[in-house]
Length: 311
Image (cartoon, rainbow, N blue to C red):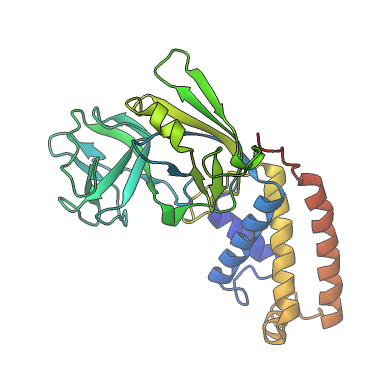
């Protein structure tokens, strides 16, 4: 698996522009993100997510598109309740959840917390269980941790849900309580007949929330489905795709770059002056594009995922 920086280098080299003389770094990044979207559409990632229930809440965001943040030294200090993540970019009121925690007794992974104005700096922050509330008092220092922003503005609309179940996580092992049917699978497609997915937001029938009242800390929703791949942001971010899918990504990026050259005479002329490209004519470029598109069509058919029906 390659880092984002390595992918940028591979795409630039495939387009015979290793020094970014024609395709700027931002253009290469745009091509890669376009490739992520296309591969994710054809061969999406299968996911299973545990969703923590919140009292009186029927709508839940699935799989935030925001990249995880890592806590950095000194991570989390119990004496002050201050958390540290260099250049975190969080603002007061931002909802976050911890993905991993070592230490930090009093905080829980998966639970939703809110950044508060108290103690908020470029690198430090504190969290509360309610917007603008008191800081959570964790009683042991944190030595390792990751967290993620959550919120409706970061929903992933391309998500497809296959199955939703209600489980009791307090049992050992966890106990399945019920299967929640999709609303569009019922005799009458009503919002309260079952779960519905809209723009990456999962809506649960009111009856489920009423039945779970008082058990929100231990009951949870288990959700299975398909999702696009998380976009890469920093050069050190690692592509989570398999080797085969990364190869498909690079093939598509090659096609996308050649399409840009074919569509812009100015861009092609600039690219043509680079070392190794001077013998490429417009007709030769069109031929190269056709060959690359055929390679992509063959690869896309090989990686295509047939979706299961929701149920």
